Length: 215
Ligand code: ADP
Ligand code: ADP
Ligand code: ZN
Image 1 (cartoon, rainbow, N blue to C red):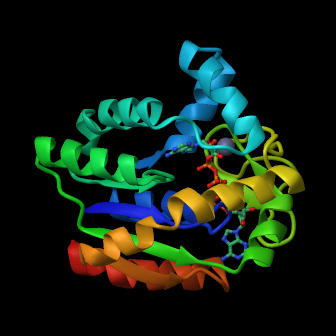
Image 2 (image 1 turned 45 degrees about the horizontal axis):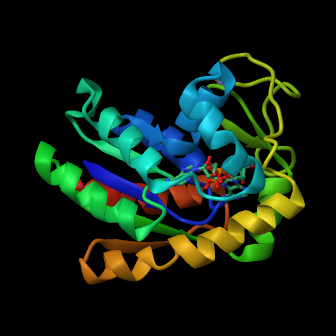
């Protein structure tokens, strides 16, 4: 099953991807998680990416294309992949098609998760995350024990870029650079719209009903 989870920051891509990866036994590949791990580890890549991420701007395409090419070549992707946060620009989408053609794993579906702007801001302002990639919301999806990750027991934190001014910048970058990909994938006949508002479980059943057709 070869899937892209598409949508603005805060749409619920990561939340849904974690559950979907368990349900379908395919890897969740989040470029945001990969970049944050590099920033934490102080790698060259992390040093290059940090300035862009702190400002809410996109990291240059060449950097992302390199990351995704290496990641998709790993053996756990043989049964499929769930891409989250990639592609975010037309050059990234073109590069993805070329990579997928080369490895013989063409994209089957792009799920476009739709949520209104004001709801996105509320979600991101209250988001708490874990280094393991889980994300929570203090009101909408709290962990069982305050500030502790249900999945791994580590302490939760708020992302540096989940501040209102940076959130607005990220939404602007999304509209300008990423949103045009909706038509790009519609024209390829790959796009399926998902209503991302409402209970997390309800969104999950909509998505899994769609994805069951690709099993
Ligand atoms: P993305 O990966 O698309 O940026 P996340 O999955 O991290 O988004 O979700 C953003 C925030 O919204 C998190 O705090 C998460 O707990 C919360 N969230 C996710 N799905 C829903 C939903 N259906 N209703 C309310 N809040 C949600
Ligand atoms: P969210 O879904 O909340 O916007 P992500 O974790 O996907 O956040 O991304 C966080 C940041 O990492 C982005 O604001 C951007 O700076 C960088 N980033 C992640 N994926 C990409 C990508 N495909 N292209 C460019 N920058 C990216
Ligand atoms: Zn965790």
